[in-house]
Length: 445
Image (cartoon, rainbow, N blue to C red; front, side, top):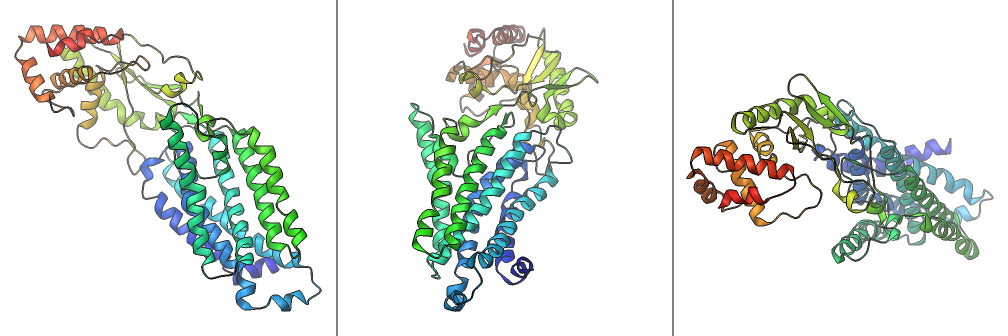
């Protein structure tokens, strides 16, 4: 009964609606970032916490100042009813509405995922669940802060602190750790629910790490609730014990490297799904929803290659091997394919969840990828890039690429006899398949 009254009369619902409105507005402004992929939706939700956690803190602080604002503290203190019976419905109403706002934001985002997604990972569920728990934590901490400091400036100040501490500070520490190249980001960064780095399509986030995070968020939430309900100095002092215990238990369980260290390759996402209605075209399972759209341009590229190159590729396979995991020793080297296989990259997603194939840019990209070395982390020099752009221009029939020297180098190459052009590029293709670049660079001579 009291819980329903709090939902109707308090600011809990309005705070949650504000968080929901802002979260949805930001999320759906870039649907191409998560369309068709559950793990990307869950990852985007954790990024949204950069905005939602500060709002939950501010909403809790606004509600926490209610007694002081209404000047009923002394009146309530004279009643025989225990304080806990008054604060629990308020905290429950705020916690439920804030967590519901986060979940509903993801449900709305799922409208861009569910119709086309072909791969579901339980890691996405763990990411979403831990994010929802963190909203309750932030709301209850805000309640405690609002009661302790019932000033008008407390909610906005708390929101600013939330942005700095929960989002920007961990991101700053993480970036500087990566740039230093001598150490991984500290595991303690996972004590913040905000992850602005994001996962790639071939990664997953183990559920065990989400459970550890959720346990930490629950411990801090209990501390916030105890501080909100405490009336004596001793009780307030003891209220920090759950957070301290949670820190002592969870910090050793968090992985080195924080979120980057926790991410793992998703072998199911890397499985190939093939279309054999013509020259075979294979894509990874996580991108299988794009296969029907991509097969046409890929087969068009194969036809162009067959007309211009001897021993041209007759099938195409998407390259989805996360090279970062190879460097970390989490996966073996990428699979090697022969000269009969064109290894290509999936196109970007559009706003509706399909492939972004506007214009002829993707065909040009596919023709350029026939000169790409899919051989691990071999370094690319300037000459290799330029030679690849000249070779791609020869296939397209006009100068394409980003290097300003490409048009002139392409014109020089066209000055060779047609048979010589064909022979040089055939040798370049054979060298690239063997993970060598000498014949490709010779295109510039």
